[in-house]
Length: 209
Image 1 (spheres, one colour):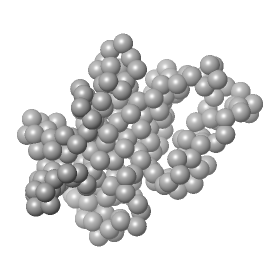
Image 2: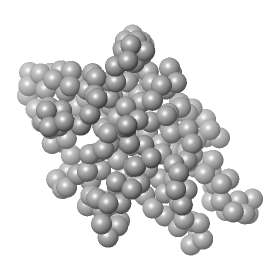
Image 3: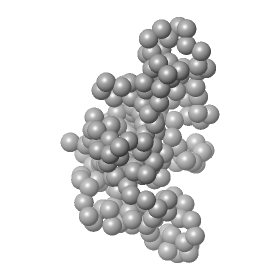
Image 4: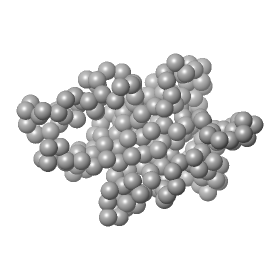
């Protein structure tokens, strides 16, 4: 976690408090939101929707595995599709299946730190906590991109950018367990008449029960 502009001592303290609050998240509470506020305060100003979700993720390290490429094959007449297979340039996580709904919707989770910074011991620790029934959570800045492909196929991407919790997400994917996450969506970036309602509807299939 990078605490831009903070004094080092304060950054260490704030980081420890956030990680403690995210160690076992059962619900979105005022106390949780107050604790992670310094992290969220580093985002652009605006109005944000906060959603607690459980993501059935898998690790992706090849273009042919990724929704960036595979989504093309779900379109009608995809054999004639001229869009080049996509790849974001780095390994990532993704929700295993398209989200239910009228519009094909694909959820991917993009890292913000290089793989070499992964500590296997930390992943093991989070995996053990999950097996014991705890719910360590990540924090994701979420982008919802609605698009028409060649003015024919409606499609949606839900992109979660990791603000905190790389090791927790990797542990969940490795164990085949749901990855709990706090998805934070800036409403000013949502192209909809009622952005809050749109975010709620799109993320509803992922919402933690």
